[in-house]
Image 1 (tube, rainbow, N blue to C red):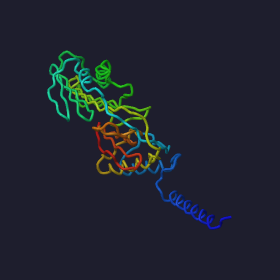
Image 2 (cartoon, one colour):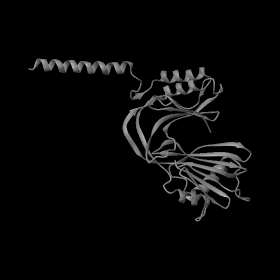
Image 3 (cartoon, helix red, strand yellow):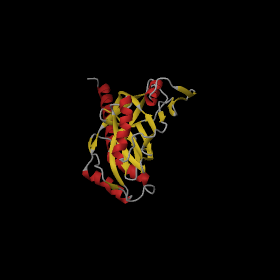
Length: 287
């Protein structure tokens, strides 16, 4: 037997074992499985000390996910403008590297280089009016659906009434049942009619890279309520806790979206916590 060589192998093996045990003992809590009921209770208690009530179920499972690769939408900006304006021949109101504005009979569509599309319609007397949240949603769906501008992966995110016959309706994208935060259709309704639509949509291309373990929802919850302490009114409640992907619209051919925990507060605010690092990505975004 080659004793010098065997001794080196043993030394390397023991060093690797020490490193592994040290990581388990002192590394981040990212093991697969489930958090304990006591850990969930600890997070709920921490929220209570900040004056926040937890109404949503706190996910116990600790899982691992990859990045989600995205591409911009739409591919044909002129075609989208034609669908929104309901006309084939449009007037170019403004054009530059950053944006193009088309017009037709008082209505405007602005298409930005990063894929964002904004529709400002002219007021139409006698048109169907929204009077409550249900009819507000229907008004937006009836406008976008026949124009093939409500993707099959779109899901209603929320509806908020802002005044008499005034509402904000937001749809979000999903990817294989997982929310894609940042992929939004947001419609403003004033005097019962659509006054503005903002489309920020992506084309998901699939998961990429190795799966990485997520920060448990309990840890993300503690981060969210700690960040909101002194800012979010005491007595507020967390009504929703959801795991999804977050991305900003980018002027790029392709990029990766990262996972986040989204916490929806009763005052209309959302807090997004990075699923990998556990840091706040967005705070106070209101609905």
